[in-house]
Image (cartoon, rainbow over all chains, first blue to last red; front, side, top):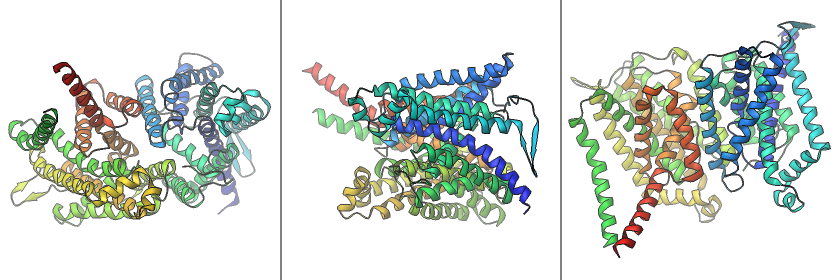
Length: 291
Length: 324
């Protein structure tokens, strides 16, 4: 194996992995604040991508289309929270939560199909289709946007959780909802904000990735599974774990696609998920385990 | 008096439920309807296993289309490529799915709750990747020319004929599931479904029972898949996708998981709804499924059977109140 090839796989693995990391962060934020594992998470990735393509087709500038798509998805997420998450959070068992959010995921998928059709649609690259040569490998400019965007989002989230009252309230609620309520935190509002933030992260990932891999209405469940796999791989419930898990999953996929076969890359990622659930349920960083 | 009438109603329901599938093929000759009836039978076979798994043992699986596919491919390949009878292929397909169910279920059922849900989801996707990538399954192009089962000169090659193969097998599967449910196994499954810790404290080997019911549900899913392959004479990987696994869960969620009656009811629902919504466009059925999953689990977690039971009880109370 040429070292150059390995560098290429590593670059594409980190690019895809940072998308998974952002989706996994969304998963983690929603889970921590509401206790709900959101099977619709990946649908927001898909929805934002298709919405952005649709807005661009209406001759809206790309940057405005991207922002608009994320805002629309955030609005949709707020409505979904009111209709389906609020009634079940805290009182429902795992099974009910999975079924309700899965039902929402199916509905979003069908609505996207009805609105945007069945064709895979790509967004133009943010700043042209150029590529940069790094030693023996190349990286597209859009991939740099993905890496940069993911890094900015992670830094922003870090500042949000460590420096702002809203972020601290969210952490406190995740730690102990009753105690957070006792010290005056409106935990119902925290639940809404966390849900919108988590789904919004999915939407941002969708806008970043759609110029590179076209969006199609069926892709949501794949992102949900990959996002969950990334979160579990890193350590479920831990934001740091989500980032590490996302990158690890991206690298694993890129190298198995490169050395085994691209047809089997999903298989290897999901075998890794089963293995980590069984043998190291705390994930790489070793968090609490899922019930 | 009120009680006696309730028993009569139940007997009448059982009688009608048994008689209707026997009589209707003689009355109805419409291929469209008979085709739906075949699918009701196939789905009932799957649901008869899943109700025990989900409703009794309270274990989830979002990957049963994988077992359905294993049954279909094994049976189809044995009958088609080894040129043996479909009557050997079908049990072999069911046996292969049973074996796969044990191999997958025994380790994976150590997981609980969300981890189990995700691991079975992952199994479903893995199985589909394998079906798509292998050369022997025909990959994405599928597997044509699967032989039709025949007895001497009689070929089960029309919906009307295949019904007489699928319906008795569905009925037999229901009887087996019923016997399991009513035996000590069913009680053990209920007990571990309510509280695994308490069941184990009571001396129930939870791991063994969980893997047994998972293996059984995988085996009957494989049986249904094998029949499906020989009915359509063509299979491809998208008949065994993760969406199909989800539809199987929708089926028992709508029918109800608390009682085995939910199995044929859910099967009826899953077979009929898409056929009649097809005129509107294929995706409306999915929209309805999504809506039903959400609504059923938010408001009617017991499914249609339990909701109907509660409604009947309430109506009975009303009637008594007014007659007094």
